[in-house]
Image (cartoon, rainbow over all chains, first blue to last red):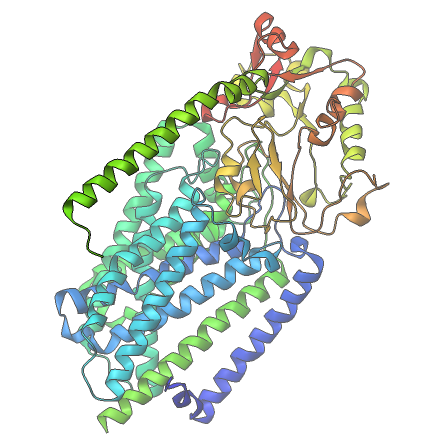
Length: 384
Length: 254
């Protein structure tokens, strides 16, 4: 009934891949048990940098989850038929991403056993309460939409009409999850790096670029390993969405840079100097410059007609890495350094931290593999 | 039974009348409770710190020591994992916007005692997703170490760096455990509680009593005749980053 049985029949290559992922998950889980036992002291976090890789990864994957809207919107709202074969892939990606987000929050908690206190003592004045509501609602919406449409497809019946309503509801909902996530940071008076109204628009722009980049790459992988036909036209349209979202994101960053450096309020410039000044011994600066160079390189490829057709996968990889470094690392750590008392603390994720993060990534990859396996099996059966 | 329009109107009128009577009876009773409210003065605990009196440079740390022993604060060697309720930082760090650039080094390097500001509008309590930290009617910003989930959102929100997280089990790092005050567990946030446990017994905070120079003046900011209010009338005082709108209850005489 759940169609998950279709994930149990696969080639040797499929099972080897799943086994690899399970091994990484097991390694991450072992380190998590150690963190549970010894406390968050085994991470690189400190008094001054109290949020790090976990929260940054959470932020990044909220963006990937929200980006499903970039296939749902053209398909359900504008009737772009060529998105028919990838809409459900986008929704499955959103489901896996939201589950990763929940896991990233969970491993960041000092007292995970008490996590249900968020529901037991609902606090509407906290943005975290709203983030929980919007993320769980979004997960539910996408799970229902993906499941019902796929089952209708397997039974060769049209999907019920109310699914379209849910899909349209999921569009503003996707915008809301990332807006609320940006508000988590941009509402803090004491953290001048995040205290900017451009943060939410910037989050959305980077999400609508990094998400489609990942989805294009996944489609290309599916085409190669499973022979899944994705219309060239759909990929081209996704690439256009990714290109303009990336351009808008770069524009937003430059707008922020202008405001900060022209106004030159020390409290505001200090964070950018920490993140981008090379040679000052700060370990993040090289990452941030790699991110900047990759962003420019990706835009050059994507805006040059001769290059963008041949080099699309490379451009997608550049976009994804660039935004992962910017949002999945620098944006959170940069907000904490210097601290309100001017301390420049050194933050470098530790081996346990990286392994736990790799474990959660593998959970995401495992979910995506299983979901896509089910989708592809259903479609193969219907088509044969 | 059918209710006619006439019945309905009659019933509505009677209900309104009854509600009105209840209101009238309540207002007759009001003076008693009003008198009770007048007898309890509003309280907002606050502190004035006279930096000129502090003998920190002569090696005195009586206030910090008193707080540490009273509250079972662990002494953790790794600075990244430090837990502190009251500590000192140089004047130039604490009041960066008050620097002229021409003051003598001895002034800018003067150490200033820091603690939770017990803000009138605390950003930390606003962001807490479980109400594990909240503001009491007397202005003290409290922590419930049994409810805190350790998300550290309050640490991100506090503009004063007044909150510490237990990155490890604090108990092995406490020199001698004071049985009158709870110890904490790993994975929760903690901070200065203005010694609410001592206030409940009619005592002043431990740091106030421990200071041999009487640097700290503690009292009710809502009472115009209180000691801190007198000091604030007579002398020029500053707060930490008042422009953020937090309304700190800790004042510094510079």
